[in-house]
Amino acid sequence: MALPGREQLRSALLRYVEVPGARAFDAIGVTPNAITLVGFSICVGSAVLVALGWPLYAGIAFAVGSILDLFDGALARLTGKASPFGALLDSVFDRLGEASLFVGLGIYYLLGDLPPAQLILSMLSVLLGLVFSQGVSYLRARGEGLGAFTTSGIMTRTERVIILGAGLIAEGLAPVPIMVWVLWVIAGVSCFTLFQRMFTIRSLLERE
Image (tube, rainbow, N blue to C red; front, side, top):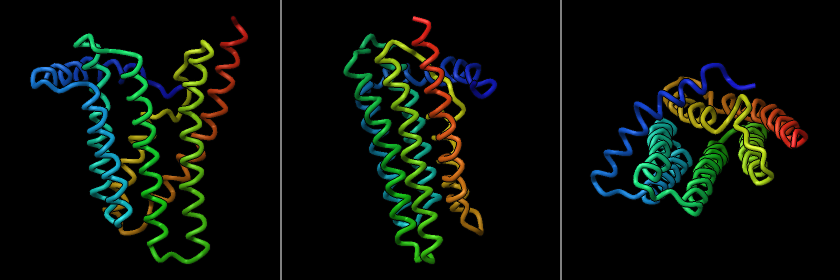
């Protein structure tokens, strides 16, 4: 099961955003790996910003870094530079960039002078969000290694990135802290998605 309209949205992004953007980057001589590394650097910068207590700017930076991630694969295909190592580099730095944001959020809560019980719950939301979200991504990679290709699940990386960026921006604008609730939603739905994807992969493997 996946969110309704996901594939239509991805098709529209590919046609109207990724391909035109890739052509623009190609015109100025940017390489796919350069986009990957710049996007990762911006996401790490976002983690630093949230750790310093600036969630609004962190959310904006994370959105920019994540948007760049749309273009490296499209540019590689457009220029004929797609390679297994490029795909590996993209996958690794995507996960590292996302994980760095969770680390930044953990520091944000540690330095936030929270009451002990609230601090424990906040740190737990960060830890579970990180574990389950990375587990979802790992299952996709492991399934592909076994010959079972699937992007099934409610909370894939696309949804996580959108929710994280929007949550950080809302945290910076809202009069009360809300990011911790966003993290609990990510953790809970990612946990469900992990098992959802696991059983999907099992079904695919059993058909072979």
